[in-house]
Amino acid sequence: MKILLTGGAGYIGSHTAVALLDAGHAVAVLDNYSNSSPEAIRRVEQITGKSVNLYEADAADKSVVMDILKKEMPDCIIHFAGLKAVGESVEKPVEYYRNNIDTTLTLLECMKELGLKNFVFSSSATVYGDDHKPPFTEEMTKGACTNPYGWTKWMQEQMLTDAALASEKGSDWKEPLSVVLLRYFNPVGSHESGLIGEDPQGIPNNLMPFISQVAVGRRDHLTVFGDDYDTPDGTCRRDYIHVMDLAEGHVKAAEYAAEHTGTEVFNLGTGNPYSVLDMVKAFGAACGHDVAYEIGPRRAGDIQDSWANADKALKVLGWETKRGIDEICRDAWNWQSHNPNGYK
Ligand code: NAD
Ligand code: WQD
Image (cartoon, rainbow, N blue to C red; front, side, top):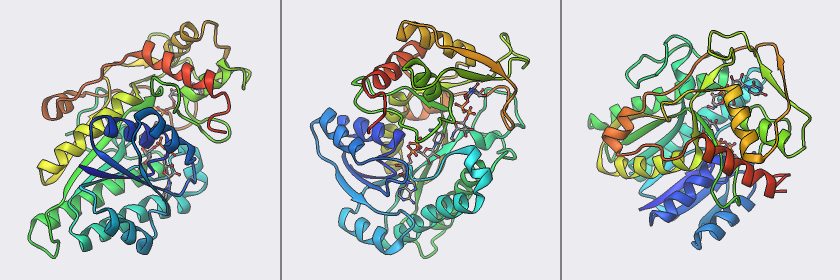
């Protein structure tokens, strides 16, 4: 198949490009580089020995997106483009709603006009909110999100579901849509080559890039956000999923979308929770020295526990994770130690 990745130069998009190319699919990427670099795609080509059609464009700009889609006529669009920093979304809600919602609406309008059918969306476990106890299953009701970023995912899921429903009912859509909503848990790690990886701008918001930067000497120590939770070591637990396992989930999702219509939701997680201190310890073992940390106060908005029930993805897509936290830390360290300043 020919697959177009919006936001494909970013962290998850670039790893998915490798997995798709390795699986024999053709890949085009559309990115405005607001949080990435074209260097990531150059390295994707280096890893796979295959070329990618690369477009610098804003996924919310309808006339530009139309031109690209007319040229590519992809069998499937995987929509990664979006702003994703939770804290920043609280300070800049308008920018977050504008970018994240607009890109999805633009893509839907273009797909409708061109008769394109298959769409895979980067959603997030954040849509479960704090209303349920893990493991989270897809049929649980979506919860109340704790920040504008989360609400953009919640709303985009709803928009896509409504569009797929309308397209099936013989409205003015040329084709019934096929929408796959992928709810990622905590994507971490990097491609085994160490050539591509996560390259956050400024101070990392997320745990793993922060630990990596402490390990490589860019930062002094990690602050662990709270050790007074009701968990075995007092720190929060998450479902950390190797980004190449996640990438392979997208290959299965795109292939599934091509064979179906309607909307289907899948959790992409391991089902195994690890605490913040588990991750600090595992990373220390991978990099060969302790990672300095101190205990700080809880971070506002954090939930204590989040992990997936990933049975549906196994049953329906035939997908499950193959890599554990040792591989995650090994590969994250390989990327960080060979690229201490990211792609710069
Ligand atoms: P990322 O920031 O590395 O990648 C997003 C890419 O989209 C970047 O390359 C950025 O330049 C591009 N982009 C943003 N707005 C754009 C626009 N208007 N037009 C064109 N390109 C645009 O983030 P990521 O971690 O790879 O995340 C990819 C997707 O997965 C995002 O939608 C994110 O919300 C979602 N997600 C990420 C995580 C995570 O922890 N990384 C978890 C759940 C869901
Ligand atoms: C993990 C754990 C922190 C940094 C976020 C988004 C979510 C999804 C993934 C996009 C928590 C602790 C962290 C630090 C710490 N993104 N921590 N010190 O919060 O599970 O999820 O990213 O959809 O929507 O909310 O991930 O990596 O920020 O935190 O102690 O410096 O590490 O408190 O327990 P989170 P995270």
